[in-house]
Length: 339
Ligand SMILES: [Zn+2]
Image (cartoon, rainbow, N blue to C red; front, side, top):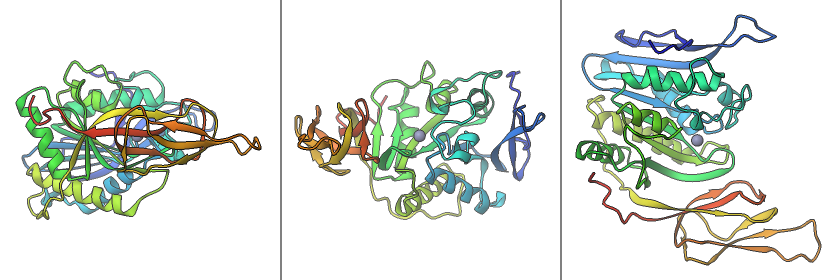
């Protein structure tokens, strides 16, 4: 027994399509016997793998929420082989508020795994995902974006794999999703993972999994949403789950390793001098922090400690010391398709 207090309105073992809610018990002043509704759809037909797709792990990241909801409506059981578990708003209170963290408990779900079955609502969700959902899964996809404060191009994130089989499966998922960029981690992962992320939860349960960063800035980017929806169908087809779908020609993915973030060291209004995909040299001035509150104060220069390309940029002009303004990545130098 997992000890979870969350009850599911769906039966994970039943064939067909069911939609309902995971009920997170939540007894509060305005509603003594209430529960928080985490939406879920399970679609099952015949033999085949189980694929979990989650969005809304952070509530201000929207492409995944739409793409997964649309799949839940569009896919009928007879179209698939296997089981889809679709969770478009995994941290429902955060998603309802459109915030990265839950307004109920300040929980940043992607920093709370493995969670706590008797903890706060966000901790209970983390625990349920890791201990109830992940043991059902063969594959998992966790869809993010840059949230309110960052913007990413459509980017897959994955580990290198801890066995030749896992490495090949991860590369298969990457090729199927066919996003423009892939950020390949060079360490971590595996069953011994201590990561507090949904990816860590999946790794600890031996689930072959990837995540994606899909836009950001608190908005929905139509081109990225289309690319996401195409990628998820291509993925299901590649895993043998959606045989009636004919994938188009792959566009190709540029594999990157992250170098690190460029940070603001003063407070002010940030002017980026680079855009996503631009090349950056080590020591190059990549932005200026202006001080309109102080006449005649010249702007501070922000320089990059790394050479590479801009993978992610800050989506808000106001900055304080410690804010990441860019993330820099370089073409993958490691062998990323072998263990
Ligand atoms: Zn996120």
